[in-house]
Image (cartoon, rainbow over all chains, first blue to last red; front, side):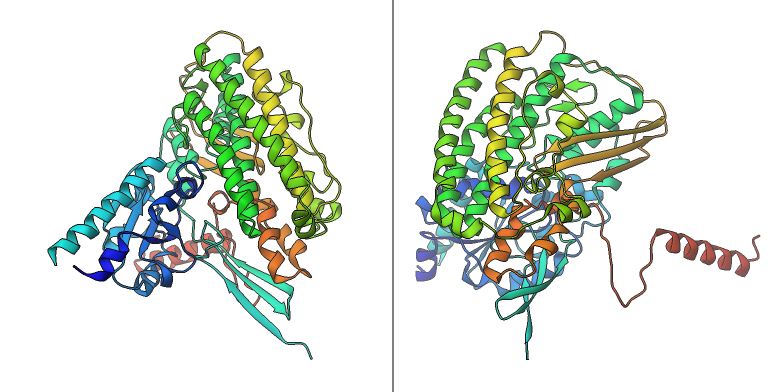
Length: 144
Length: 395
């Protein structure tokens, strides 16, 4: 059992990246941090820099200006790191598939571990998404 | 000799939810100039909307901004109704007003929380977001969704407010008002907030007029404008309410305007639920004739304007949107210069900027380089077509 994974599943530090979303996903994400849903109970905290984070949480359909910066951020993330994509736009580019300014989908830019679908997903869905990610980390832990 | 340094903020910065890039030029601790680069959020919504049918374009404009997802659809629907002179049933107008005011409550509450967060005063942040939850619950009761309400359509609304839901809505509003009163006392009597916000980032009345500021930003500088009163839409002309204006123009005044507006909003919702007539909620309009129409409404941040040109087909020929932040944003330069770096974040936040609303287009103003506008581009393309024609001897 890797020590890193054992510690990770108890306290996920999340960096939130809005790659051209409509704000709804971002609002619901912040809603999760505030008293009603309070994900800090599970050790999940938003951090200010990708270099402190274990999870890159990405919202929005990545536009052409944002894609090189998303790649850069992903490369800066310390390993083991995980990627969650939040919302319909992030998962499949959603309504903005045909836009002239939308680039490739996020899962072609970087490997994605968990998708949370919905427009926007409810705060309960994001808690479930984190649960799925923790399950995934644990299963990797056992496979070692 | 003074030494100037540039401090880059962004584009992915922990304080701001949305991506944007600022370059603050500082001398010591004083901000002497500011440069802004946006465009990380541009999704080409106007162009997508022109490829969709009128009914679908309402869903597109709903996703311009998550906070204004009631304002944009109403403005868009009003623009289409303006082309065809559709009559909207009175009950639908009242329901639109309720949605609009609920949105104002949730947006101002959200801003108050984020302002606390910008100041490093996370207690206000947590409180405001906790007390915002009753509004989300009411939204869920009225429209079925917490965000992206999908409530508005051309010629009416999609869902009715059921009679049995009204006591629940009033109960949650009571709860909200009680907590809002507490929060108002806690925020406005707090010496820390007075110290941090008073006299900071003053936007004078002259500057506000010069920059055509809108919404709470303008009302905090003493400009008495409000689309709800000046060009009444929905049911605002049938209801009694006040426009809140203050003279100071600093960040504190902007906070107070927003808090007092929330009380007005609660009173508007109560009157609407009380006066709402019975009847149909949708006029089921059919064809949209050729013509032009505008829709303007008072979004939480200021006037939101939609222009639609129809050529008689099923989809708009041109759809132009002007969001309030587009007008409020340049005032940042006027307010931030001369302040310290630590105040820059809250001064910026004071206009309640919304980049996903604003980034309809990108304006490039590079002082040295030559900039191509639409006419130069058309001229270039015409010249090139002429060259190609010459080459193949077509003309």
